[in-house]
Length: 184
Length: 193
Image 1 (spheres, each protein chain N blue to C red):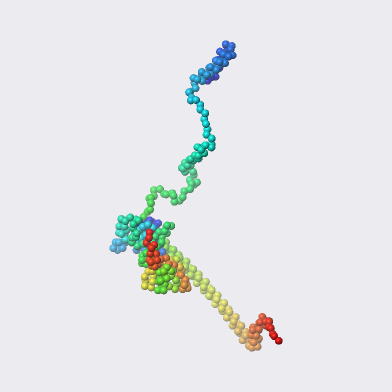
Image 2 (image 1 turned 90 degrees about the vertical axis):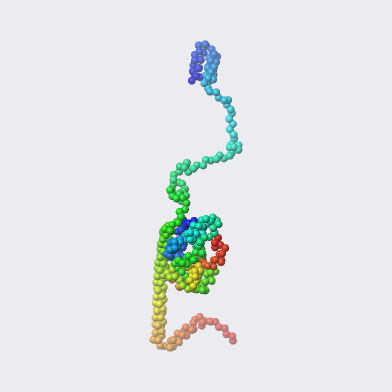
């Protein structure tokens, strides 16, 4: 387990910044009670951990350590970063653009489908095309995240069956991808 | 020089004696002596045998010498030096970690600024496109309206013409004309007696 290099940090932040706004700073700055969370790399996976726990975790051999803190995602072999579903909690707190879906759209999303225009209840204003959005249900519970297929202005004019948001991850993955979600 | 000297001396002596044989012998002896005295001792000559090319030792390929690039002394432009291979001197080896909050903050600020610029430009572009689309729509609408007006005008003018004439007979004939088309009148009919 090690801290990230400059290049890795930039890649990670670029990815996170596509979903979150300026409040991403809050992830790095230490809290009022002095606790600080840091990003750590274990294998190809990136974890967001309390610094104290991260320091303690060095006492474990690398091949034995399965997971520590919150898994954010992993670096692919080509050096890109892929956000994991487990980062949803973090993204939901600092989301830049949000989509609320109706009850009829929840199940299709949790089974791995995209969000259709007919499912959209509300949409953040001034949202451009291909921007990262966090998907909530009508009770403000985050269900997943995705990428907008059209800008918010265009979505209003779409027909009900056309795709509004392409799914990237959804809570249904906890069951569907149970075997591979935490494997290194 | 001894052999060349010998004959001259011997020759003078031989002439003086008057014997051709003696002269000859003296000459040979002089040369022999001088040879035996001056020449170093050599081992007896051996016949050197060269092995033919077909012998296996000769058939084996000799290892060619491999020259290093330095030995070749090539001009620099002629060499292939991949970009990643050359490492700048005096730089730290290995990865440079970002562990301090300040470094993270600077990277985050850079990334955020970049991202926001991208979003802004995207929104600008979207707005411009929307404006263009709106203008096109308005233009198309105006054109449709104009066409409709024109059509209405034409309809009105025809109606007025008809009213102006006020001729029912003419109207009837016109209706008849419209009904009795040339195609229909020529329709073949079969009648049985």
